[in-house]
Length: 183
Image (tube, rainbow, N blue to C red):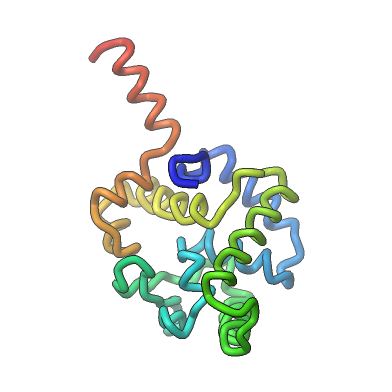
């Protein structure tokens, strides 16, 4: 759905609602763990669907993988929301891939997308998707560090891509207001 609502990062309010609702869910469910993974790391579903191809693994206190579009290595700190189950989840992802579960990686990635969207419906955020979670992860790093270059390095994306990911609906509204009112 390029260009659709799932390409934008979550607003601050939606992020707060997401966290409150997600923390009320049972963490042992695969779809909950998967959604936390995407929220915490910004990982692309293709990487989680084919962890052997993309080198998804734990390395100390980081999760590492290759970005599907560029094969650039990403090393992301394990956050508190996934720390309790990260090893279990990574094992499950590898088992599903090894056993040919859902046949091929593309089907698994689409299935994981569906799981996240269904969870979004359940928690009252119907537009929730892995893409939204990925863009929100970049947005959160930029907001926290005030450094787009740090987000660029962390996620292994170009400055242009990091800027697009971090360009929130609030930023867009503010820019539109400036254009309407003049500088």
